[in-house]
Image 1 (cartoon, rainbow, N blue to C red):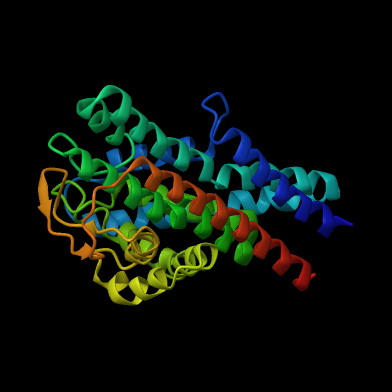
Image 2 (tube, helix red, strand yellow):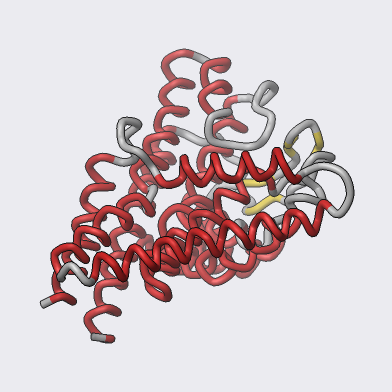
Length: 311
């Protein structure tokens, strides 16, 4: 009975994300993760031994978060199967970010279509780390689609992967690592040393999920070109992981991603992914959104099947 309740909770969490996304009126664990990271970085990121200090902060918060959720999970389990199901539903919901990812992408395309170039640049700056002030329409649309592909792994597949291995504590620990990466894993003067371990750890925990994401994108699209692009371009990206889902989407859409961009004031030469440098259209966003939703649903189904088989 308990297993069926937990499985139902996973599917309910998926439906909640599909319907609600990340409502601003709900207290989200990621917000508190960000506050802890910011406070720790403010205290430790100075003087000598910054690499070591970064390791200390990451490992301390990682152990704290995992242990806290593990203890909370044990406490909830002692209250019965329905309490366990509620615990899983709530935090699995917080661990997913599919609806929000698609929504943010749509908002950029809509701003560009309805309000013009500057509005598109400003809306894009909410979801990417690159400098958007000089981007043209093609570059803005490219950035949106690249981000949707990359974050399909980070925000959907990877959290479920770590849930499958380590339950809610593993899922929340992954979200903490991903938050570290988004806050301090930059190659600029402030973070090049302090955030080095966080960047390496994020690459490690996303290594398998990123490749699974690319394969799932191939499966839901039935695109042989996407499969071929993963092998042609996946390992040419500056990131060891982002190239695989981005390559898959480039193959699905038959477009070209990549190229040089400015991140935090520094020009980064990113290799091109794909061959067809055609104009990107709103319909490309719609296809990408369908891919994201299909991969998310397929991932949930696979996860539930695994849980049924193991139990």
